[in-house]
Amino acid sequence: MEKNLNENICEETLFASIFNKHAKDLNNFLYYKFGEALNPADKVQEAFIKLWENCAKVTPSKAKSYVFTIANNLMLNETAHQKVVLKYQKIKPKSYTNEDPQFIMEEGQYMQKLQNALSKLSDAQRTAFLMNRIEGKKHREIAELLGISTKAVEKRIYSALKKLREDIKEI
Amino acid sequence: MKHEELIKKWLDNDLSPEESKAFEALDDYQELIKLSDNVKRFEAPEFNKEVALNAVLQKIHSPEITRKTRWTTHVMRIAAVLAISLSVYYFSTTLNTNISTLAAQKTTIELPDNSQVTLNAGSSLSFNESKWSNARDVALEGEAFFKVAKGESFNVMTADGKVTVLGTEFNVKQRSGLFEVICYEGSVQVTHETDQKILKAGDSFLLLDGKIIAKEKETALGPSWINNESYFKSMPFAHVIHEFERQYNVTIETDNIDLDQLFTGSFAHNEQSLALKSITLPLNLKYSKKDNSTIVLTRE
Image (cartoon, rainbow over the protein chains, first blue to last red):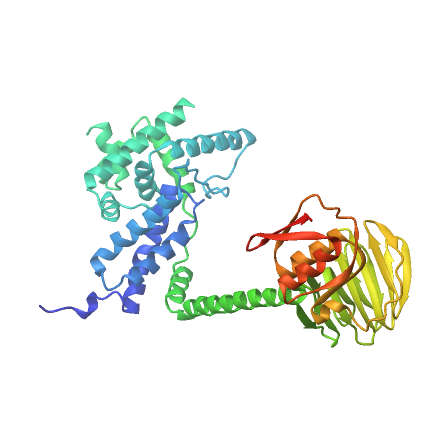
């Protein structure tokens, strides 16, 4: 049986390209799922170091799901399923300019509600929804990253949207 | 197209131009856009791929780290061994040297300054070798004969008093109820509670049951026990019996005997039956052996 030499992640340039391809997605996935308290960037590094240590056993095609699983487990080992509160940027996008105090107050309240509502979503819903909204990822891409079907992603995102709208209206 | 379908397509960024118009015409269009726009503000913090990759590669390519940890563990091990041996050394040097004799045993010790101490049976002596140059102090329990080399003051601490000398030969005996110092050469100073007494050659100091008792001049050049003989002069019989027990490692039971009567005489350390005779005959006592280590004394 012929063995492709490129199949070896132990080769540094290949390893680096795999890192460049998946590291940011992994980081953001961890952030949306677990928040920043547990330092997603560190877990990304740890997961890739583990990948390097096991480079002979993991093929490039499996590398992505390998680091996602490892990083996810690293997180789960530390988290006692605490409430995930994501931070939003205080600096507002440029579209909001002429603001009167009333507007600023309402704006602040809305963001508070949104923050609350986001932390109430399930990990799965929040991760898929934020990947879709913030990073503009198509359902198919998210499905690939999470290793689930497109239909499931669509369902998660839509249900997340529905829940968010309900929660914001309610409060 | 249905409301839900439109929203799902919008979520997937998959609206055709016509569908876009339909979506914009929805009642909740504004609300959805506001939600979507504001959600974008929850973006993950900047992730610097290059920095992260370099950090990872550095960790991967630094066997130094492992070598470093191995190196530090080695150092830690050496340090631990050193710490232990140093503390053992420290303890052993600051700890007192203890020498003790069992019953029927005598020993001669040379102190760090060449002073000589001969320990009688059932006695113990302790001194600190590392502090010897500062203070020639020994603690004594029992009986010992000292030949002290000339030098700074030499102190013998006992439970009953302190004997200070400059360089001389003297015997110290401290047994229950008995504290006796005999000076054979030079001079010694005996401190008992608040009393101080200087002994010249031939003088002795005797404390019996708390009372200081005067004694005549000592003419011997050294204590008799050094030559394997215990000599007593007007000594309560109880102390004679105790000394006998120590020298022969036996127990003596007495029956209806006056232990306070005074005894003058001696017994040898190397022949039990003869020694027994020498302490019993003068007082008209009989002795019998109960077993190997018990002797019973009775009135004749």
